Image (tube, rainbow, N blue to C red; front, side):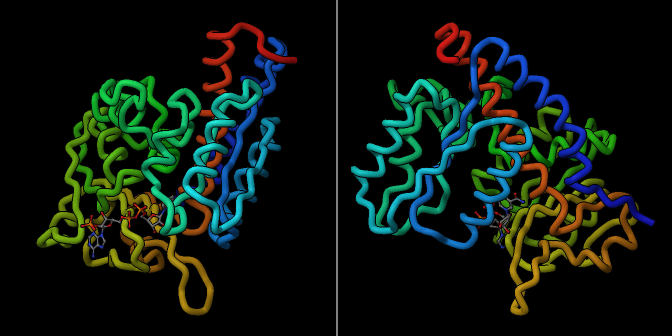
Length: 299
Ligand code: NAP
């Protein structure tokens, strides 16, 4: 019988510490604040926004929403980001991605101040175009970076359930910049032996079967089946897929795989539930950094 690694349980364990940190900031005269920038009104974005807002409220972090029209111009959007950069009462900025096709996403990401980049999307410092910020720091093993929230959420789950990573064979399926790659670097940082798979990987089943820990971040419903998984493995399922009947499922064939493994995250109810707690922790860190740099900025 496998242990279900439940996101709500991990988020609950994180909550008290986050509230304490927020109270300390309040006592020092700082009210932490996140701005979420949303272009248009896609259901996915609205769902994420509701979850993030609820989590911030729970911790006591102010959450502002900048709702922008679907047809906003590049310049107008960059101006909104710049306003948030310059607003001393805002500690973290999250731009909901992907943006509509007519917008240059990377240019918008580059516009976010690295100090407020709580979603960890910045590759390099836009000021000098060279020095590493967030994403690049992760690849250097620098722990001061803001790590993309989902990949850090997986690490929190592993830690909460006492999954040892050192020396373990880990297979990460997916190599995106928001999940697969940063997560692989975090696992490597914990001395795991990491194999990264993608759509061109030959013998994906073999790469999975030899793993003691599998992380699926593909975006294909039930793609990882029980025959691809070793008895007693640990499985973290990052995928979120909507089936034709509207139900959600992960990348892993949960019902059959759970019979074989030692630990597994459900979808929904797994990784996704921890992501907004990680986001909250990043906003608090950004507020602390701002406090140290500018003293008591506001009451
Ligand atoms: P993405 O950018 O589309 O990347 C998907 C990755 O999967 C790519 O590297 C792709 O390989 C690989 N892939 C696709 N088909 C494959 C196959 N048949 N075999 C092996 N690898 C394959 O997606 P993402 O943004 O990383 O997200 C991945 C999943 O996580 C999605 O379901 C997304 O909704 C979910 N997600 C969840 C959360 C959360 O909070 N739980 C947050 C973010 C994303 P190539 O590089 O070769 O194309």
